[in-house]
Image 1 (tube, rainbow, N blue to C red):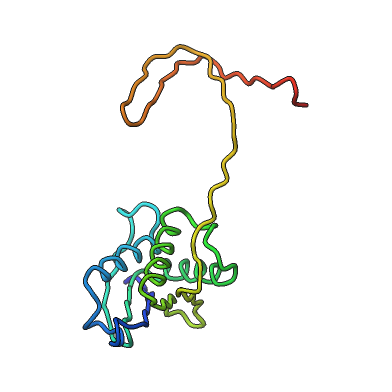
Image 2: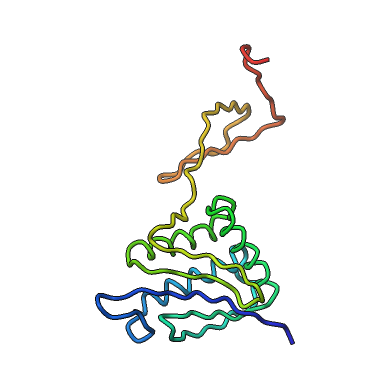
Length: 178
C-alpha cells in the first residue's frame, strides 16, 4: 500500500463580523482552493498523478489534502524555499499561478493562508494582505532573426504563423559585433 501524507491549507479571517468557518465558507471559494491545490502539487502532467483526497475541517477553515508521501515531501521543499526567499520566480508557471491566485484572495478578502505539510518539522508559508507572492515581470529582449528558405504556408486569423522549409540554418553576425 502506498504511503500517504497531508497538505494543510488553513484560512483565518472573517466575513463581516462573523469569524470564518466551514459553515460560512462559499462553495466558489472551495472550488478555487481545490483547483489551486492540484496546481500546487502537480504542475505537470495531471493524467499520471496519484489520487488526491480532500476534507474540510473547522479551526477557521482547514483544507486537508491527502496524497502520496513522495509528493508531500517535494511540496514541503518548495514551501521551504518560498519561505526562505519570499518570492515565487523560481516556480513553474502553473504552480506560480496557484500562489498568485491565493495571494489575490488573501488581499481581496483579508484572509490569512497558512500552507504546510504534515511532515515532522514541516515548512510553512504564510500568505496574507501584507505579503506579495507574485512573479516578477518577464524580462524581454529585442532580437532580430533571419530565416532563409521557401515559405510553404502562411496564415492564421487570430494567431498568425508562417511555415518555412529550410535546408540549413544560417547565422548572420552583425558587422558591429566582435
